[in-house]
Length: 405
Image (tube, rainbow, N blue to C red; front, top):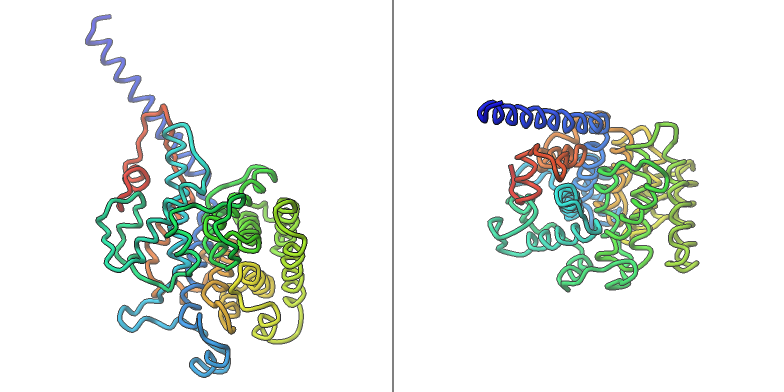
């Protein structure tokens, strides 16, 4: 064989190999495509609950009724200047959670080694922190493509614990907490973890739960600040990737049983009993007569992680087949309305799916396109691998170079 023929043959082998890699990449995407509707539901659903509750976050129930009527807020209170239903730091941080997770996965696929998920999320949070500072410039050096979105450079009443923890320059963890905060700022942002990773066994799901807790512990060091994140991760994971045989109630019970076992050596008996008591109360009140506001008041106000999760569990169980009723109930109380609305939206959105969410909530939702784009990325993930020649240029731009599309 002459050299020219040899080189042509080599080129043909390379072409065939590349085509095979493209086909494998598409098969990987196809395997995840059935989950897209629920992943979109979980991410967008959280933003919907957040946007509905944000205008009344610091209002008492009486103040809400005075402003919006006897039944409270029932529809978006649109921003006067933009006409959009704007969301809070809850959804901002959820988006940056997703960005950090996907940067980490991409690094693992292309470099053959990956650190703890929380490390990449912490880096993403530090970039989110910069978006909250006056005069932040989307053109500054960064890793997250979200940093280039001007609309995310906006102060949306971020929690003081998140701000102080991230400004410290240190990364908190379960074993090395930065503080003793049990605020809900840990649990309200972890949903993307459960939306993205598909566990293949019960053991896998428990590892995922622990990752959820570690992501919360970056800023919230009290067990009741990070255990709710593990429970939420478990519930959402079953909603998206379960076999469809379990109810939300069964998922809640399974999630709590797993968490109690995982954290029995790390949390006090009193803290575990407190979490169990709130979940038990939420389960009972979901089937009891009485108003949602009355029941939620009996659970708490949602400023702490345990109460916020319990309120979301209550709303999700009481209105398991009705996304609208659930998020409306979740925000109409004297407490942290945007966070309880966000967590409820995460749960029911992931269980019912995007298509089951009424169109009225999708209309005017701030940055809906960005949310849907991130949901697709969470669904398909990085389909490139070390040693292969296939390159997804759009993915490389976003999760290797940190640039928006």
